[in-house]
Image 1: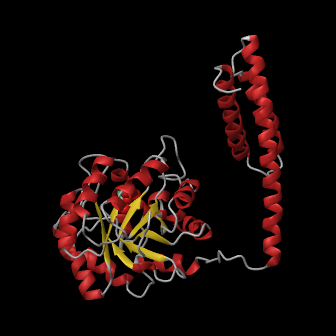
Image 2: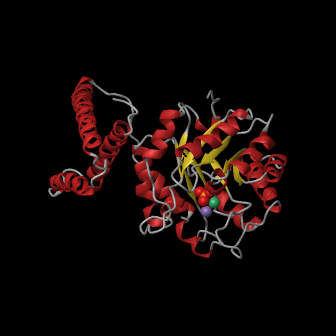
Image 3: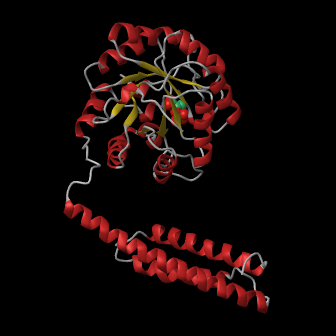
Length: 355
Ligand code: PEP
Ligand code: MN
């Protein structure tokens, strides 16, 4: 895909900050937050006009009327404004009101029919659109939403990592899975990637550390929900910060460079590459032996998957984690991946698909 630059991203030297309330609640609330945000490093003002709520009966946004309040912010405070769109009607109304940037919410990204409807409504319109990750950790679904917009001619596109919902998650409202935005960026090059620590955290105390992690992972910006009186917010009260708190968070963020600074640094990289090369050689050897075992299993009529052996492998290596030098879960997932590739190869042997 070939993208045009979203001008709010500037020259990439400082992160884009999108801030404002979860929901536009009243004209006064919108103007108050926006006024307080002026001069605090905010690039674009946000406010939800149509709110996708999990359960009916919650505050679902004031709708079209709030677009006029956003327009006031744009005109009186010279702040570009943004809102979430989930239908073609939202797109038409938002564009007619002069909204500068649109985003597609997580629930909508998960629904290809809805994304297609939005893409069709945007055909021939030049407006930047940010696509949040879908609620479930499916990078193809996320990229698919992007492709629908790209195919409709929307060229100023960006993405937002807002975490993924899980049944038993406690710490986060939507746990971050940083490998997904990293994979997204690997597959869709040159796309600005923002992080929404508010919807990841679900509580304001975690916003600073999540924002710092996003900066450390070279994200291009942040979307942070901001409200003058968060505890009384009509939606997402636990995760919003005041404009002053936002300024403190932004002031504390450390920006690191992604450039390779010197030869010393490169020599570390080379040492890592050497080890990775060896790991790959070993993996190739390991798979060759796995295929040989597959042939024996075929001959002797044994099942490919033998649970006791698998558990033995996992347990043997998790023993290396007791001193904390490497995380047990990480080791488990590495061996799960290696084992599942061995199993895939053996299944092909047993079924005579290759030899
Ligand atoms: C929002 O930004 O207010 C919102 C509803 O976010 P998400 O789509 O990430 O849940
Ligand atoms: Mn919200």
